[in-house]
Structures are given as structure tokens and as C-alpha cells.
Length: 436
Image 1 (cartoon, rainbow, N blue to C red):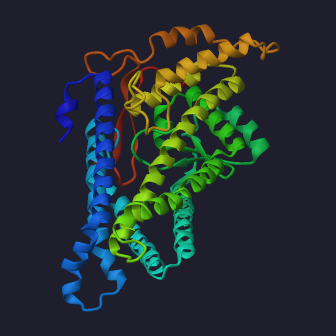
Image 2: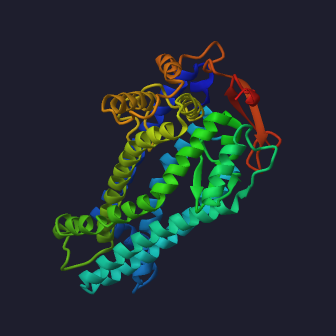
Image 3: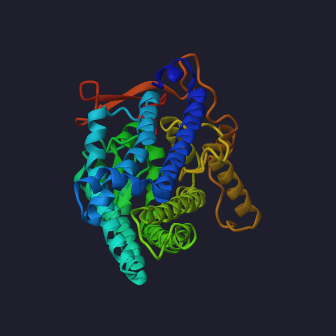
């Protein structure tokens, strides 16, 4: 349904259109979710239980009363994500067929349905018995378990898709760099056959550095090296562990948020004298608020740290241009516009491309002014990077692509592709890796 919007637009128009539509759909999704939660908690859940459960049972157990409530909420939260997935497909960020996407999403939906059912039942039982400490403790424990389980499942999924990098795939010019790192860390450089939406920088798992097959095809060797250095710095700072701890702390706020809603809105609905199914909706609303506030905080922290990681990468490499080209490549494949208003990127963990370049130049200027690098010479390509930053992400040509993205690169896709097992991406014009 979005294909016609992107058919005749150039790259910058596509990027601006994509970020705007994605923001609008994300905002609509939040609006639909909070509306569904307010309706359920204000009495809709009780009416659903009366219509679909009570006529068939004189003494329905509380577990059955929650079923129609969860079904309505599941339908409400699924509409806009489906539209956002269609948007990513239309603009080329995610080329996986619908069957492949459903195979990934459906198990999570089924698990989430039963997980929410069980946790809500435990909460409702303890609320009925007046055990305030028990239901608040059960709520916090279930949220912590969900966060830890999500991290564990993600690691297992990545591990299942990992393989050793072959000699043909190893980017030219990185052998010496990788051997030095392996001598000190003892890890491996591995490839992940994960063809999710967009393009991601290299990351780490345990002691190993992980590069997706998309990244191998898209990044130039020096840009890939910059991404690997950034992943090494993240590994030394243990950012994944710190993010996990921060998320656990942030989601704990769901407990006081739910109590405030129960003893304010819920009090007007008879709580704690009577406990109804609708009161569980208020607990969900508290968790929903806590979850999205924690997401905003985590994205803000991620954007701040991303600027610091950029400067650390340049300090280690002694060059700027590889990182600048990596930012440019990331922006192209993910349809990030040159400069977007803050309200469009508020849900993104990545800063806008021009913001990154501006922060890099400002950071180098500050270090130089403070004399923090008296013993070090400035990066050799500083002047080149400044010239590149002046016209970075320039408008595309007649074909709608940027000036540095003209050739096509192709690589094997495992079962996810729509075109005979291959997927095509626009690649940088200077694809000759031997020059780097």
C-alpha cells in the first residue's frame, strides 16, 4: 500500500517520507494501545467477560475471564506494527517475504499471549485476597523475568545463526588488525546470517565479534574496521550488560505506577473493596507507561553514548573518513535523512547522521582546544573529512540514489529472499576493496 509513494521519489525524499510515516505509525500505535487499555480498565473487560464467559459457566474461574480481555488487547497492538512492516517492505529496508516474517513473529505472539494470561491470573488472585505485597512482588518479578528472558532468547537466536568467516569473505586489509585483537582477546570474528530489516553495525557476543552478511556486503573494508573498533570499545565498557541493568531498574517503576493508578482511577471503580477484571487493565496501563518511558530513556542514553563511541573509535584508528563513510552507508541502507527533527527520531537509538558528524568535529575541536592531545597529531584525513562533511548525504541523481551508491551488490540469502535466494542492495560506487 506504500509502494506508489516511493516509486518516483529520490533518495532524500524517500528518507524524509519514510521517517515521517514511520513516526506517524509509531505514534498511532501508542494511541491505539493506550485507548485499548483505558477502555478495558474502565469496564470493557467486565462486559467482555459477561458476554463471552458468564453465560456458559455459573462459576467461571478467573483464568477464563481474562481471555477475551487479552484477545482484544492483542488485536489492538498488532494493527500498527503490521502497517510499519508493510512500510519497511515498500521502501526496501526489509525485503523478507510475509511468510518469513510471520514465522518469526507468531511464536512471540503465542508466547506473549500465554505469558500475559498467566501473570494476569496471578495478579488477579492476589488482588482478590488483598495481598498487596504478593501481587506487587509478582508484578516486578514477572517484568524482570521477561527482560532477562528476552536477552537470553536474543543471544540464542544470534548464536544459532553464527558461522565462522571464510577466507573469501574476510575483508582485504583487516588481517593484521584482526590478528592483533585476537592475540589480546582470544575471540573470533564470526558472521551472522541474520537478514532483519535495515543495516546494523558490528556487535559482540561474549568474546566474539559479530558481523552480519549485510554488513560484509555493504561496508568498505576501512568502514567495517571502524565498526569493529566501535564494537570492541562497547565490549570493553560492557554496554550490553549495563543496558540490561538499566532496563531492569527502569521497568521496576511499573510497580509504583500501577499502584498509583489503582488507588486513584481504580478507587473510583470500587477498588480495593471489590476487585474486578477491569482492574487488571490498570496494572497493564502502569506497565505500559513504564515500558515506553524506559524505552525513551534508553534511546536517549544510547544516542549520547553513540557520540562518545564515535570519538573513541577515531582516537584508536587515528582516522576520521572510515567512520564518516560508515555513517553514510548506515544512513543510506536505513533511509535516515540528512537531518530530521528531534520528534521524528525520538524513538531511535541512533543519532541523526549530520548530528554525528557535527558532534565528531566539535569533539575533536574541544580536545584540541583543551590540550588533551598534545602528544598526538591530528588525524591525517581531518581536512578530507571536513570537506566530506560539508556535502555529505547530497541529493541523489535521476535514479533516485545518492551519488556514492550506484552499483549493485548481491549476496546469498538463506530462505528469506523473494528472488531466487539472492537479495540486491545499492552499494558504494567505490566497491573495489583492493584500493583500501
